[in-house]
Amino acid sequence: MRLTERDKRIMEAIHAYDGMLGFSQIQRMFFTGKSQAEHRLKLLYHQRYINRPNREQRRKVPEMVYWLDRFGAVVVANLSGIQLNEFTWRKKPRWFQVEHDLAVNDFRLDLENACQSSQEVDIETWIPESEFWSYPDRIEYIYQGRKKDRSIRPDGFFILKTKKHRIRYLLEIDRSTEDNPRFLREKILPGLAYIASKAYKERFGHRTGRWVVVTTGRKRLNNMLNQARLANAKGLFVFTTFEKVDPNTILFKRIWQREDRDDFVPLLFID
Image (cartoon, rainbow, N blue to C red):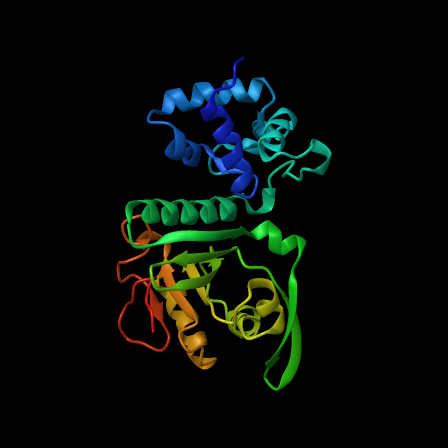
């Protein structure tokens, strides 16, 4: 099998997207037709450049997913100019959160597509979730008069750059359908403390940022908004639902809600 430039870019993308991509995501990025994508990915799988679930594993995931096999890791390591023994790659998906990781990838793809279509904004940085799991920041915060501490692991960190601004965002993908009164204690209060912390400043060189939360539905979103109001989040958390996010809406359409405003705002809201 002769590797094409597209094959190499597919393997690089799998690695860049935190080690796993779904079939629909690879097709969206690299192919115009489904059968063409299936044929090429099958070849890469049988030649051990990429891996995929076995029959039993496939029943547990929403779509076929792919990650690097050893030969693919060699290719990406060489493209990166490093030796395989110095190259870190995901050996298998986190099976317990495949749906969550696919949702993170979809958000990132929508964001990248939106930036590619715009002349006003670029993605300057994307730091994947795995980086925060490997090197978490631990912060202290106050809840009901008591001091607590928590490791902060956003689902991604990204910077959007316009001609006048560099805006920092921390991503939270929320797939729960039930109201969660713990969101205040486990996400909002530590999230606010993190942006104000020395650890955040040392990691990102700044103390500005905004949490971006995408959740399942209106009821869940309203619950989160109410908890953000209890914390006086000062607009540092913005919320929307999965159904509203696509490349045409994610940046400039008024699909996002803050607890300190009654109207909807675009993600690139500057104040």
